[in-house]
Length: 292
Image 1 (cartoon, helix red, strand yellow):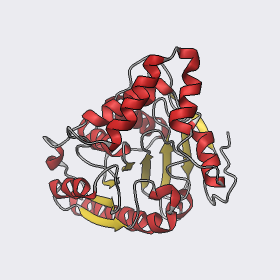
Image 2 (cartoon, rainbow, N blue to C red; image 1 turned 135 degrees about the vertical axis):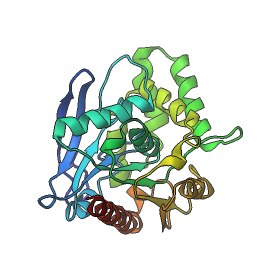
Image 3 (cartoon, rainbow, N blue to C red; image 1 turned 45 degrees about the horizontal axis):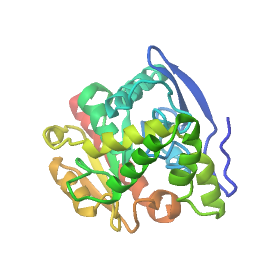
Image 4 (cartoon, one colour; image 1 turned 90 degrees about the horizontal axis):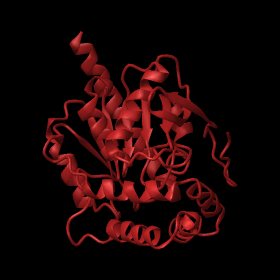
């Protein structure tokens, strides 16, 4: 299946469906990378997918790494079902995908909502995580009074409750799709947003808003890096920095951009992401060599 954009996306692979036994059918994009290369597992943000979040990164990352991007539950072409969306399920899906692909351990790269999923992947499946890269994300997203995330979640929840299921497509157009412009990039982003399941978006928003890894994130024992979006109004930079300071040895790679920099200004985002992934992979490799 192709999600080709009406603008150049060099190196973005077409996706394929992968059955996760006992969990459902998910959707992945893969770049093989050099022989024996470490695997990056790309975990996208809320209301995005493996195309919209990462389209600019597959080619550059694939020059050094094996790259695997997954569509999370209810997002894009990800798993569908009546089960309530949880971040824990997404982390378990990611571990099951590594099983299906025969990958012993990977470096999860989590963007926004993908950050909690990456953290939970380590917390629940520690032997599958060799390092971690966290982008535009936090250990905790919402305090009382935070408005950016809460406003979107509340709007979605109200719209969904006020309309029957058959009108959810209309709600999706008004709340999720209309926030993108009609430029070539925006038109393609609108196409991607239409793939999302409205119920899952609401549940995912609440899950992100209630996430808090502060009680245990300090125990993270793998090489880690934080790609910090300096002008982010959705996940404030101070909160990203606070997360970095919780993790022993975490290195910070700042990006001059907002929360959507991965899509609207990849020229700023991609170099920092490459540097962060290379740093984590190199430290993980040295750690393996010391271990034996």
